[in-house]
Image (cartoon, rainbow, N blue to C red; front, side, top):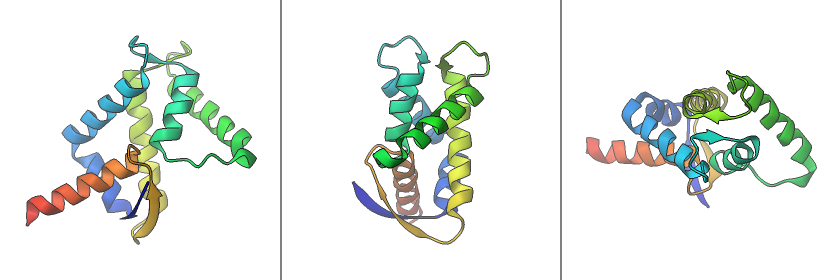
Length: 134
């Protein structure tokens, strides 16, 4: 786990770099699709989002988190087949990242991030972009 400074531009810069952001989404999907069938079940999505979003494992909030995952699953399972496919996953991740950017706002905040979380990937993208500029 690492501590990083993020703000909305950290996240938005990552999203706007379409090639790198889409590569990240594809890597995340492949990581979660452990059986390789191109679809994520509720269980795979729940476990995967927990890792990708760096959510703490607080048993007091477990029911709330499960309810949130269920709402997310229903919202993005557009064809109602009981699975999230790659296109639905891309839409889900894009919308979650945009929501995080809005929630974080313009002022920088310090956050503890898991190595493979989406916010950590946004921070790594920002650092790499700053190095390229210098």
